[in-house]
Length: 217
Image 1 (cartoon, rainbow, N blue to C red):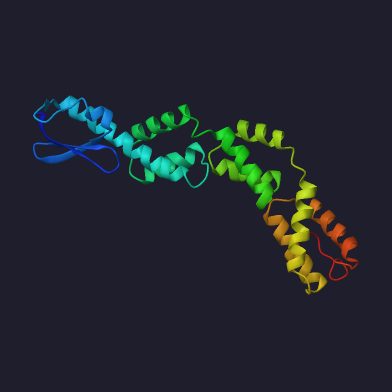
Image 2 (cartoon, rainbow, N blue to C red):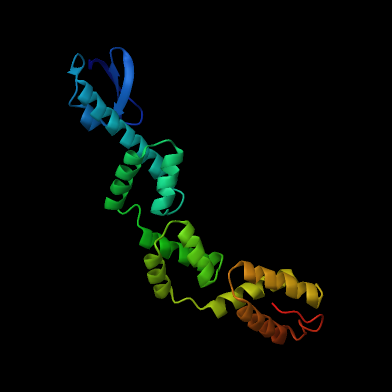
């Protein structure tokens, strides 16, 4: 059946809208559109291929916009494209395109995530592993990047505890201990380390945090 090109209209985006039999059918890059001309008849297969190219360009635009806010894992990009309605083939083709130019790289993403967390929102090694798994990063990459990072959990936990302790000033020992303990545990630090950190704060502040109601952490 095919269709006849009735108009090639330049768009503000720099692309070209192709009209078939008076109706807008798809968009192409200016380079691809330069091969077409009004009056040209396209076969069904040619139209299918051009529609596919248009779909890939749409996926690329969506992916680039998503990546403009911060680095993303492959799974994050794939999930975002699927939510936008792109099919499996288009998603895979776009991921391959992004990999080739280094715009998605799970190893680089894992390094970014750990560095960012360590600088601004510290987490334990265990918590970081869980977060990266949820982002779709493979266990092998997670272990490799965590080894590179050489996290000092004691220093991270103590830094967090000192910052949080300033907000908890004025509370009684029991409430202070409970809130600070919960805060550190939620960030993945284990109970024994939390006890050690509390003992350190106790020495620094010159008051007992364990004087009331002895409880296990």
